[in-house]
Image 1 (tube, rainbow, N blue to C red):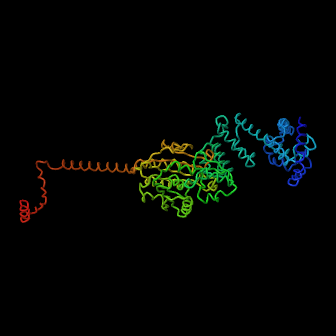
Image 2 (cartoon, helix red, strand yellow):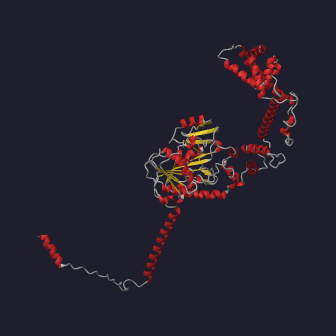
Image 3 (cartoon, rainbow, N blue to C red):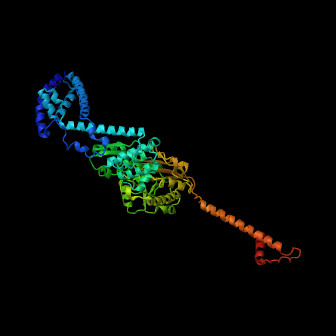
Length: 603
């Protein structure tokens, strides 16, 4: 049946095949191989395993060539069985309009395989099924790599299950980066099952120190940041976080609903060769996979129909939820992505104050406002810490995307790995506290639907996020409310030796390895009183002053009593001196005026 089907297909395709092979020979040339079935040259596959003699468990000589050949032959037999089934099905078909597409597939397949077409014309079934030398090499190489990976994974799993101790001092086995990564996975395996897999002579601290050294070697973070992330995440999750920062985040854009709809914009970009999908949790977001044109220079972009914006920067505006005809402040607005989003949600009504302390950055802010057609914005250039002095309790809603260390966007700026230290985090957190206090003082608690302050950062550290929120909760009349976001990780209520307010569970954290966005933090506060509560220190000082005054009065009264007791008896004491008060002379009434008043009265 196999030969008949192939001979019949040769008869059908014979006239068209000659023309195609002549054209094909001009376009494609297959290199000549001296030995089609010979062994692999040393420069090709054996070089792949050079330098692996140190790993006695992973040397390629432990695999027999016959075993690998059996794996390859088994794969070939499976493909032959599939081809036989296809041939049996195709032999029962006759030429018609329904199976014309099937015949076209066969013709296109012949264009890319000269050997198959020649062998089919000669009627040699065995030669047509032979693979080329390069395919054979690829099969053997894939099988060998697969075998090595399976054996390495099985060995690691066996060592962990059997409780085999890991020699932390054995640096002879580490010769390249792959060995360091393998050692990281081994240490993580021990830490995950520390009770059974640990070495009794090695403490957990020693394992973590060794893991920290290896992570610094592989990913290039400084010592402080590596230790910081290992405190923030578990060892396995920290490695996932480091790996995610090595990959750039997806390109996303936001539809400007003031000028177009997301569906129309997506269709226009698809027609220009852009491969994209809508973001499920956003009504205006689009994720771009690849593009045949520069995504930042299309006519739609220049017309202001969309804004290139990270997906994580949608979240603070979604949590803010501005309403039409409100007065909103974006305290750190440049380059204008969040400001224009707020204006679009307000449908160009009300007023949006876009402030930034850096005058140079306001140029890009103004440019984006004009390009996207925003008409209800006012751009200001003030220090955000003094904004409450200009307009105290003057806004319904305030968005504070505070300046931070950028430890959530390391994929955009890898220089953060070595440039940020503890001092930077301390200075930034102090600035964030001052900005947030000023934002709260600028918000009006008596607003009908507002009184909302949203605080966000592009950092994942606790000092810049939960610690700042907990600070203002004790110094202003505000409370945390639900952000309204459908996803995200709850915030920390305790971190190391710190304990925060229980309502911090309502804040949301976003991680690159979990949500495939930039590292981000979003908190939503509601102000319920415009009065600024007094500090505890001031209350204590007032109480101390009151106590001191009472003590002084008691001392004075005691002194007076003691003086009276020591003096002469009251019967012999002279009477107290009488103090004469000055007499105020009475004004005499003018008789003439009195007579005039009486005469007028009776008249």
